[in-house]
Amino acid sequence: MNMLEFIQTRRDGGRHSEEDIKAFVAALTKAELPDYQVSAWLMAAFFQPLSLDETTWLTQAMAASGETLDLTGLPKPWVDKHSTGGVGDKTTIVLLPLLAACGLTMVKMSGRGLGITGGTVDKLESIPGFRTDLSPDEMIAQARRIGIAWTGQTPNLAPADKILYALRDATATVENIPLIVSSILSKKIAGGADVIELDVKCGSGAFMKDLKTAKALAQSLSEVAKRCGKEVHAVVTDMDQPLGRTVGNALEIVEAIEVLKGEKGRFRDLCVDLARRTLTITGKDPRLAGELLDNGKAFAKFKEWVEAQGGDPVIADDPSRLPVAPVIQEVLWQGDSGYAARVDAGAVGLAVVRLGGGRESKADRIDPSVGVEVRIEVGEPIKQGQPVFRVHAASETAAQEAAISLESAIKVSPQPVEMRPLVLAEF
Ligand code: URA
Image 1 (cartoon, rainbow, N blue to C red):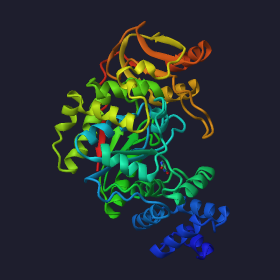
Image 2 (cartoon, helix red, strand yellow):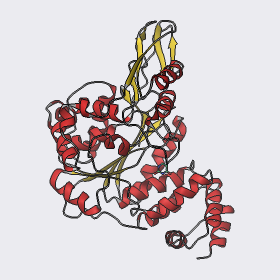
Image 3 (cartoon, rainbow, N blue to C red):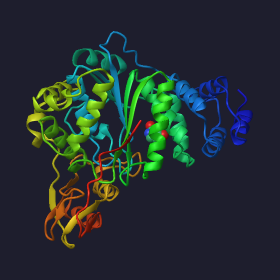
């Protein structure tokens, strides 16, 4: 391929052909292109965004750049769910067993957390023995047995995205919708599912801070996935306050278990809402979502899943076997009484990263035991002196620092405040 012409076309706002994009991805995957040329193209693509056609071709070419999961023979539908990530977002841990218990084949590859948004891999690794590195053959065998094929990211699926993403990270070209869409969807398509439920998070605790950009991303993900022949449903959901009542790896596993055992609340509401939408598009009865959480079938499937991946299933009945932090400190509200107008997910996420529960850089090790319990929701009355957070920390000093930073996460209004809806838009 002629990389110089490819860069010039992008720089001047021209259009790439499907063949050019395929040739670019092939050369990229074979490491035939110098980083400086790929970086120049990325910056040109940042300022001259790819069209929907070009984004679709890039997605397909990246999806085909490595191994793909062949699910032939497994019961249909094959469903993947994807969240763009947020503070306290543990929906995968509930939705996979819930929807598998409803008879869907759930196929999912999850990533590690970076920055304030946690990763499902880190959360599940807090379960002693839980394997996050299943091979494609192991995934398929497990899906056949229990309806769930789940693994952490493998380097062989969509390797072109891995190369491109590393360069985007190093050249300030991550925040571009066509590049984000092709990156996310190439991995989903290589994963083999034919139905994709997309949850685009919006707010201070998410990658997309404002509704306009979150909607644009959801719409574009939905459109490109359809052009790639996938059945998709995309929603934009609130991430301005933490999701649920815990943030931190082992703490979130405990909360997910409680929801799988029937606990009610805003986090369960989101899980049920997403599950109902997925059941509806796959032609199943949406009422199953709430029923299987209440009758123990989703919980039983969770135990089966933990055991199948080598984890200790006893944690499901006895979560005290999960890592526990040595220091627990209550944070009491010092300000005026009134109504909680804001519980800033971004601030809570940052406090958890500083406690050691998240990564500031890819090489950081995380502490699965630390985190924050969030004991107030937007819209609830709040009184001076009431407990608003419970910090789980590795030391007294870390707990104290977190407690101080968390005080500024809450804003109070003297007047009643309406709760933000969970689902802000759908496509
Ligand atoms: N997640 C991805 O997988 N890719 C992006 O570009 C952004 C978020």
